[in-house]
Amino acid sequence: MAPLAAAALVFAVIVLVGDQPGMAQPAGQPLQDPPEYSSRDGVLPVRLVVERRRVVLAGRRLWALTYNGFYMPPTLRFRPGDRMDLTMVNRLGSSTNLHVHGLHVSPAGNSDDIFVHIQPGETYHYVYRFPDNLAPGTYWYHSHAEHDSAGQVAGGMSGIIIVDGLQRYLPPDLKGITEHVIALKDFQVDGDSIRTQNLHISSPTNRTVNGQVNPVIAIRPGETQLWRLANISANIFYRLRLLGYRFHVIAQDANPVSRVWSTDTIVIPAGARYDVLVQGGPPGRAPLETLVYDTGPAGDQFPQQSLATLVSGGTPMVPAALPASFAPMEDLAGAPIAARRTIVFSENAAGTVFYVNGKVFDPTRVDVRSRLNTVEEWTVRNTSDEQHSFHLHTDAFQVMSIDGRPNHALSWQDTVTVPTRGQVTVRMKFTDFTGRTVYHCHILNHEDKGMMAVLEIVN
Image (spheres, rainbow, N blue to C red):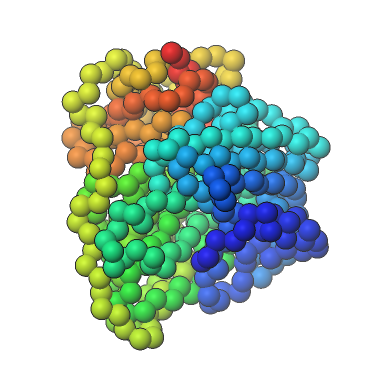
């Protein structure tokens, strides 16, 4: 979709009153990409009002937690080197804050500081200054409120961020192709509201794409499109399949790949994203669905469900040749290692308390202190009978091995699934920014119940 002027769109959203559609339409309607706030002349001004509003979802009027009145809020779009000035107005009855997930940006001051508590009735001004070498791709924003991130995100407080520049790696005949946001959000219903308390991950839930139920995605036979697949839900996993098609991955967690890889199914843990190319097949319909997924004996079981329908039709196009190599990647395999650490994810027998190295989260305690401009190797061990989703703020990492088997990474990432009773070894390079930040399980129920720890990056 064509980017909209930031200032004009901010005004249009804020003055809306009454029930909002939440970007939702009845099943079978065309996919709607979220509206966008786009930067101009290197600056993106944004005003986000957080409030409980009534939206229309799956044909029902439900109370939700919204940004600017929307269940599927506007996409924030900018370029490397830009600045984002964001004003957040909290009209909830509880404190909140904002995390720009995956972005390499300062965790200090009034930037990506998740220790901030914006109280009810307060207004807070964020300023994000992005480096010129910021990786292009798909990120997201969401609440990181202490002990309430799961409830606020499940209630609707999550949206997409796009950093432009990914298409520069595409061959000339693929530049300017149609792109779609495929934001995966789910909600559970409690009376006339989206549930925000007492969330049970395996409970029946309503899965949406951009806030829509089973929308139709149009493509011409032979046409190539860029899809931005993003799991911006609070807790659940997706195992995506587009029946009869393949996903051609060009970025993972907003890190462009060194070599394009293709797959029939793609598992997207909580918090993860993939930018993929999809080529239209013969005229006809194909379901985009999430397949059965089981996170382990102590975990959760997710059923198969249709999410959207791809309809191939219209004037055929000659399929473009897809790239093989893509973008440069810094390989940390031969880097000198400043420190090796073991991070243990565990939980109590009842699954009600979750630990990092035997401790629950304490925002006043520094658990790991790392030095700027060094590379560290962390082995993340999972001693529980369910998978966890390891996520690191501020700096991305390279997955070196999974359960002791070497992993030949094609990109860095910021989220990785840690197998049941298994381990993942990652290497990260701390660059540009110092300050206190966190690492945690991105199954937000687990994070809220203790599975988060503080990392301080120092000079």
